[in-house]
Image (cartoon, rainbow, N blue to C red):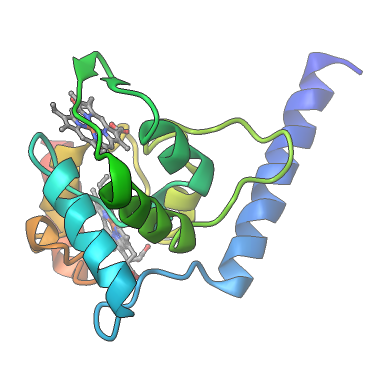
Length: 165
Ligand code: HEC
Ligand code: HEC
């Protein structure tokens, strides 16, 4: 098979994958009534993982990404202190149960731009430049408090017009 066909074929797989995610919906964590063992895990996750950047919702990455991040203290050029013992287990259970797994042979994404799940949560948004932790705040003003639900269309318009300048 020529490379061209391989490219088209993989593009097709991505499209079908996104349609699949779209029709089933990507479950974001509930903001209220999170069962207590998960609420504790979430609080610990936010405490441990928001000192250098935002703590983002688990559904943004597949389970495999979180698993790997929780095992590796060398972290994107930084060195991080990982949670240990029961704390680690609670954080892991929260991240595991509120994310979805990858399909077989799918590459583990380590950036927003690479994550099919990130794109599936943004059906209406185009990202001409790779999104970063800083860019989340442009459209999700409540992101530092864990609120990613509010992203109004005018924040979206604003973000677009700043990009154009
Ligand atoms: C000591 C600071 C520090 C801590 C603590 C930290 N990180 Fe990071 N993290 C970074 C840096 C630096 C990057 C590179 C991207 C950047 O510069 O924002 C990064 C990037 C990431 C990314 C990639 C996002 C992207 O596409 O740019 C994820 C996901 C992530 N961190 C998750 C976590 C998780 C989960 C924890 C808690 C276990 C954590 N981080 C704790 C410093 C930290
Ligand atoms: C250009 C604006 C924009 C940027 C930048 C952006 N988002 Fe969004 N986000 C939206 C919009 C708008 C929605 C609603 C879905 C849609 O219309 O596509 C959304 C939806 C979401 C959702 C789903 C909310 C839910 O529970 O239904 C999550 C989670 C999310 N964004 C996280 C992030 C993270 C994390 C970042 C940074 C890496 C980010 N977003 C960057 C505009 C943006």
